[in-house]
Length: 135
Image (tube, rainbow, N blue to C red; front, side, top):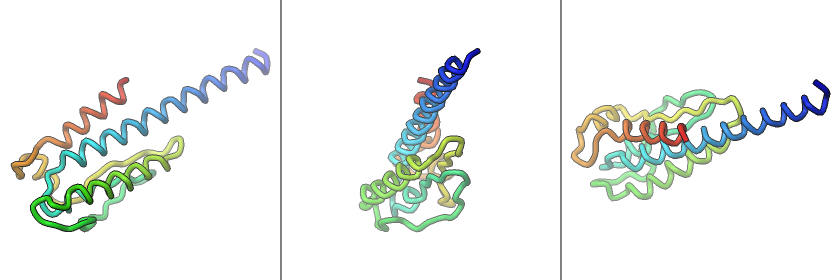
């Protein structure tokens, strides 16, 4: 193989990696969006604890972005979650892992149906992520 042929093969590999990276980011955005939107909200604490980190998990529980009662602050807290999460996803560089997690100490109870608002929202987010990743 000559140098021109090698350059062409390398360029194709670079383009393939770029396509994969784009799909990873699209999948992460969709998982975050579905999980956050599906999270039952009373005080906004569980919703506010959806975190995206790059390279390593972030295991610190946070307070609600916009504390409230009866879900009144869901929209404002959701805006913070998605804005921060999408910015973190955008910052991901090739080869870095993206972590999406929720550190609220009762998130599993909510997933299991503790709230009458919604359940299985994490499962729904994972299923949606698999759909996006599989395209």
